[in-house]
Image (cartoon, helix red, strand yellow):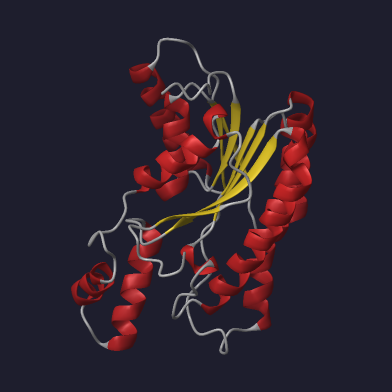
Length: 265
């Protein structure tokens, strides 16, 4: 299937590891010009080299890739980075590392504020920056990488459950507002995915329960119908389809990529 993504420009956040990195590479392989965004410049340079290598392997045409250094704890600084670089993007992938685990009741106000800033305020800064160009092009794809917790809250992730829900409702509202301009806004909800974030969750659970990391990992797999964790590339494939021309009438959805773990419809 030709996804008709050649010559599109994408801004991919949190792209130095995990799902963000896999998505950047997947898009580049489809002919997209990818701009990576993260706070660690050394890691950005390393991933940029991987993106370029993947393109050389897949395609002969010259593509233009780059990166932006930005810290998502500071929306004002992020806005300045975008204004300096320019915002001519057809595709925006909002993706930020999840908040620390723990019960919602025990969370401090600062923890909620930090998560709200990183996951909603910065997402909003990005959307406001890129939408004017998307309207000019009558084409835009905004994907928010969130969590299955927006459908079924996850134990021990109180702050994350709360903020992810806010982002999901913000996203649905934008989908309603922007659809007439050829812009779609969708959420991809990863389940347990083999990333550094998942390793942190497993180790934290092991520490709190006194079980081994292996026992915790197996228990997590047992509740997934697929009986395994996802690979980041599997989630990236879903994202790549949703940003394509082929998904032009898919708007305002929450798409779980979780091996069937989520119990709700």
